Length: 290
Image 1: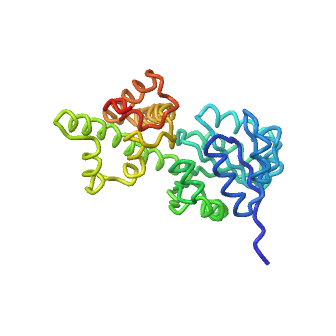
Image 2 (image 1 turned 135 degrees about the vertical axis):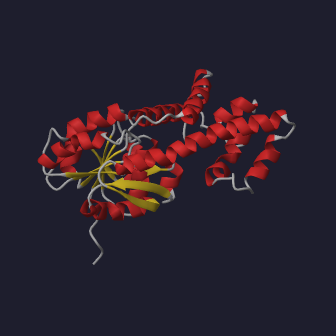
């Protein structure tokens, strides 16, 4: 007999939450979903999901409760709602990019209500979630990690159990700080090369066959060139994340000149009115690529 899958509740049906719902539904997970902005009947029908009126109602119907939200404030509001109800046997899985200390502030309340929690931020965008190629950085007890593993394996081919609660969020920040600095260095390098007489096409051709040609660059090259105007991750999201990274580093007395420079570049792009464009718009703006 096939294994009975636990019911998954998703709080937050933005681009990532929607992608998770579609992928999990396709693999037979029962779903209950909620979003502050509402859930379209088309999406509910497509994913065979029950729509909850609020997070507390979702918690009563779901076995594993996934939060996928924009920032610390949104996550805190949903966690406050969850701990206002009983959580017997429930596993709360926080997948957003937020401060490493955030979930720990609620873990005692979740435990007191009968539940448990892990932080499991996702590396990648909606397209990698849909394809099952996202990454997971997970912090929490072994028993909770093992319980979540069937869900994680449906969404991800890169699963890292980083350690205790909070280390998943910390690992995501470490990974994304590197990427954030990379895009700023790339902006500086491409601008230098252009002024030295190299074309953007030639620079990308060279970089993508060199040690500097990361998978992230190869995936985003068509967007940098302006050939693909789809949005993998928007500029305003990059501003939010870079601000978080700088704040977390500052709390540990770590100087972040590279992150600060990247944040300034993203803010300039945001001020230009390109906040909803893919983060590659920061490079296109610097290089005046239409």
